Length: 283
Image 1 (cartoon, rainbow, N blue to C red):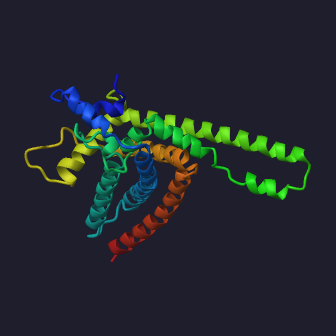
Image 2: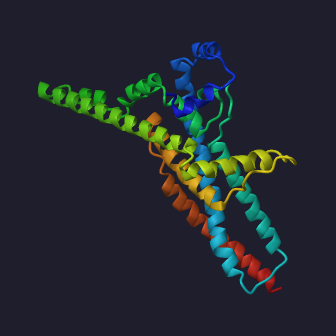
Image 3: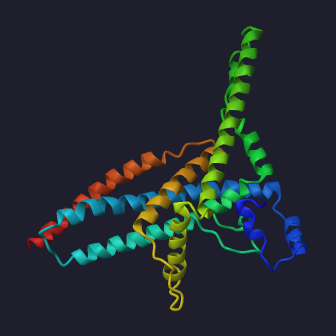
């Protein structure tokens, strides 16, 4: 049975010889790892950008419309235009984070997109995960220098350090493996038609393809995205970025902390905008 990311490899009009020829040209382990290590920082940066856009939108929506009740200014329309532009930007951010072409010629792992699905396909490869787990053993450097510091101590100290290093390496490998499995499971939800994220992503992707990136007059989106779709997909993106950073780099992203900081700053911005709109309404 094909894994979720392999579905794009085979189509009804494609014979087995063509599939076999492509598999023979599969990415090498070295190239697959290079792509993984290139995708992760780009993915994290895109998620951080989306978090900021979302924070500004939410803070403005919560502050300015309620604060402007009973007030009118000609600049209200401009405020609405800014909010609309931010919403469209957030939709583009989300679409980019989950970008994937439906192509029998180019399966997910061979696409040049820094997206959750492409990374998920690469992290399904056993050769890739084996190399990442091996690298994870060295996430906590310092034991070699500690041995130098305690070189004149009794032999038992060196043995204790060796045991500590081995325990740390195994724990790091286990953490890496758990993060990899969790990331792949998160990515798999996107192709599960029974999961809400599948429908949300379909609506956002169609809107991006048929209205944002292009304006196709004979191809209306089946359904326009809801604002809740962006909320749902951003939550998935944050979790995916956190897991990817941990599995590949052994680092923490603190995305929730960033979201809190962005929200606080955005509330200050929204208060300034509200004050200006109120003063303009009194002139």
